[in-house]
Each structure stands twice: as C-alpha cells, then as structure tokens.
Image (cartoon, rainbow, N blue to C red; front, side, top):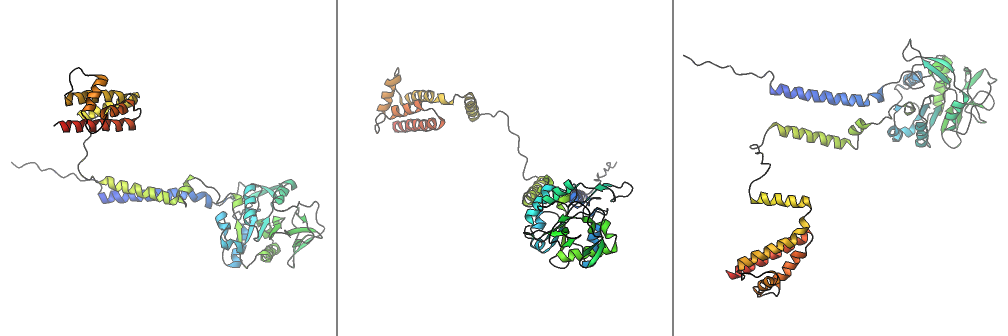
Length: 404
C-alpha cells in the first residue's frame, strides 16, 4: 500500500512579483504626492487680467503675439527666485494688475525690481465669468477711479485724470490708433504716449525705470482684436524693452507660484536633505526587518531572581520614596557592627567605646575608623554617601587582611 502523496502548496505570487508590486505602489504614491503639491502652481486661472486669460481683460493674446514675433514664448515670473536671477534684470517685466491682485505682492515686487525695467499695467474693467464659455468674461462696468488710484498710488505719486481727451486718434510710434472707450490717463508734461497735451497714456517715473500704462485696452485681448492696436502694442513693447525679445510676465500678483505649505518644505531645499535621509533610513530599516540576525532574544522576567535583583528593587523603592538621604548614618552603624564582629571586639562594647577599640586596631592612622564613620554618618547626598561607604569598606577589608 503506497503512502498518500501531498501536493506542495504554491504561493499565488512570487516574491519578485510582490517586490515589484510594492515598488510600483511606492513610486506611484510619490508621484501623486509631488503632482498634488505642485499642481496649484501650474494650474492656469480662467479669466481675469492674467497672462493666461483668454477673456477680454486678459493678456493671452499679447503672450501669443510675442511668441509669434520672437519665435519663443516669453518667460513667466513665479516668485522671488525668478526675480532675483541675473537673467531677470535684463528683461522688461510686464506686471498686469487685476482688481483682485495681492497688494502686498505688488509692494514686494516693486522693492525687488528697483533699478530694473518694469511696465505696470493698471486695471480698468470690472468683469464676471461668462458661464456659457469657459475662460471668457462679461464686462460689467469701469472700475471706480478710487480703486484704480489705490493701485496707482503704490507705484507713483499720481492720480487718474478727469474728463475725456479731445483727440480721436492716439499716436504710438508713428501709428495712429483709435481712442478706447472711457480712456484712463494721468497728467504728465513729458509722456511717452499721450492723448493730447499733458494727458499721458504711457508715462515713466523720474527716479526709476518704471513705466505705467494707464489704460490696459492698448495691449489686452479686447484691444488686440483691432489690427492697428495689435501692431501698436508690439511697437510699445519694443520701445520699452532693453533688448529685442526680452519680455517677461509676472504671475505673483495673481497668486501663482507663491503658495508654500508643509508638503513643499519637505521636497525643497534646505529640508529636502532631511526628507531623503528619513526615506533612506526607513528603507534600510525595512531591509533590515526582512531577515533575522541570530536567534530571537528571550523575553526576560518582569521580576528577576537573585540577590542583585533584590538589592536593585530595594534601591529603586528607597529612591522613589525619597529616603536615600537618610541611609548614611544607618549604613555607618551597620558597618561598625560588622567590623566589630569580624575583628573580634569584646562583647558588650557599643558606641564611642567600640569606635575607640576599632581605632586601636589601625596602627598606621589615628582615629581612622572614627573619622570614616563620621563622614558616612554626616553624608546627605548620593555622591558623599558612596565615597564614605567605599572608605569604610576599604578600612574594614585592610584590618581584616592584617589580622589574617
């Protein structure tokens, strides 16, 4: 009769498959973490006066127009790191201000762009999103002068002028274009572009290479629908830029590239090194846990056997009870009795009489035991008690050795 055969139990997955599955999961998790961390910085806002907006008040048309003209898209400034780069100082930075822009970001930008060519484009229109078409917007009304003057006052000591200009056409580098609706202008005796005498559309500050375009309809999407205005927009940019094609657009005023959180701190210097160190340590701990080195350690008893365990437990209880400072005199008395028994002291000797007898056993030192006994008796801290106990023990051991 043959013995029954048992089939080997097969694992559903090999170890190699499990390893690569875990590796792929970790890689996907890391990718998801990075994408979710940086996605808001690269998400293009819909509508508004931003370089990405295709609405009427946006500037996506100008960005595309410059791309077609220069052969490459103009760079976008997303933070102080971009502004402080040496290349940024050679660019004309176009700062498009929206009604909902961050005033603090504008103040910081002005400080960082000191001495560098910068074009500030003031806001003009209040709009609402067009629900039937993503990215489009509907013009509601012109912004009040007080709102626009608040932004203008952060750049220069000026205010918008009142009234309509008397001209029908505005000259931009020898190209006459129609006057936009409800034109915005400021008073300036030496304007770069004017809508009549002393009414500046494009002006320059006296002490900084800062330019202010008071009316955005000369370069925004709504203005570029006119062929002459589109050509004039390029002429205006060419007049201001320090080098051909050196134009950069700002995004920080629109909240792009300025949001920092804990996730970014973990994956950007200087804390990136700490994150990588933690990950490497975790990987090493995982690899170490895959195999065991040596036999498993036996779990010890909660209460150990032996004299040492008894002494340690007693010491721990005395320490927790706060009674260690009272042990010096008791230990000294115990050592006196032990020394008397070991050295054969006459029966009935106690106290100072016993101390004198013990002192007499020491031929090399007068009052040797008495002095050590008092030191142990008067000790009030652990260090002093430990030192006095050692001296008493050594004295007893020497006398016992001499007797033998």
